[in-house]
Length: 179
Image 1 (cartoon, rainbow, N blue to C red):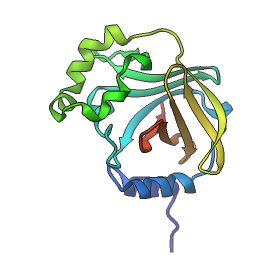
Image 2 (cartoon, rainbow, N blue to C red):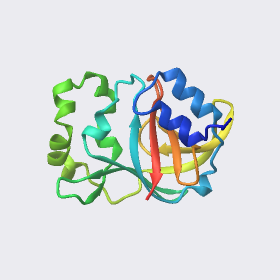
Image 3 (cartoon, one colour):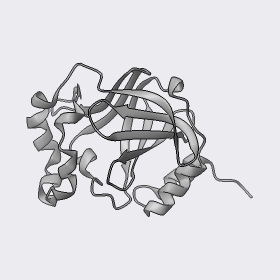
Image 4 (cartoon, one colour):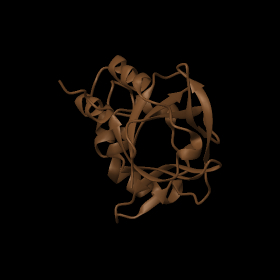
């Protein structure tokens, strides 16, 4: 009888699962220290019925970049030409996410491609700290200008399960894989 690895359990939930199943997996994974997160990570969503499901991927979201605990680029997007663009999260209307029509979500990459020049930044817009979330101290990425903390748990040596904690919204899940 073989035991499923964390990566196998994650794969069994993808691309979509119940919120309770995502939370159960997250809670079962080991913590990751803020100091361990370095480098660029490619992201993908784990749909759980959250209002943001599909929006990031449709808009060309690439992932995140951790340069140090105090220097994090929380949102990287791929431009229509294929280059990576660092986006300032405070320029994204997170408060309107659940009001965006499906037709706009489906055209997200084109809309984001046009908007990228206005959203671009060179400055780091988040930092990492070890914080307690759901009873475990783990790495948390705190956005500089938004009431958001992304929490991370380790799936394997290259993969993280992320949980976005946005004030007033259910948890939003995503997966990050080191480049």
